[in-house]
Amino acid sequence: MTERRLAQIAWLARLALAAVFVWHGLAPKILWLSPDEVAMIGAHGLPDHALFAPELIARVGGVAEVLLGIALLTIRRQRWPLLVAAAVLLVLLLDVALLSPHLLIQAFNPLSTNLAALALCAVAWLAEAPATADS
Image 1 (cartoon, helix red, strand yellow):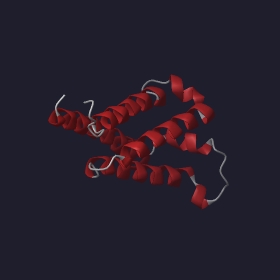
Image 2: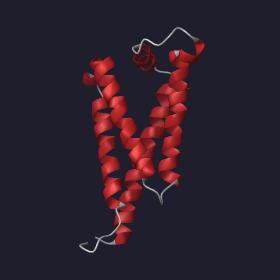
Image 3: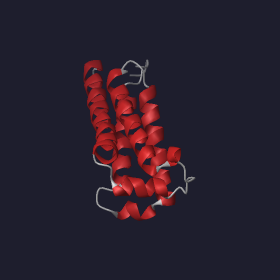
Image 4: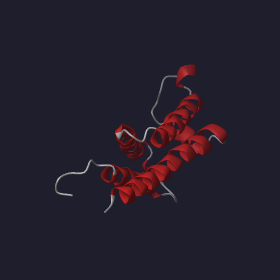
């Protein structure tokens, strides 16, 4: 496969992955705070303090997701945003599985969303891999 084609595949994967992070940061956390988001954070049993308010944590998490989405699009010469995205997706999926497992059987659940996004991370990672002598 040509370098140009691999670059196109990597860009498409990064674009789709960034869209996932930006949308999941904006829609259920910043613009329209989802009760499910608040409940998932509340399941951690955090101290009753303003700094640990689930609403605040959700909004801060939303900002972090939007920033990660932007990083995926703007920091294209480096692959670390893909590693960060994959790690975040795995940690959040594990978090839901342990603390809110009932969400894993809902429509458009974190399992299907996170697995698809992890696949996008892998596609971009592989497409951006440095060419080897065997290629």
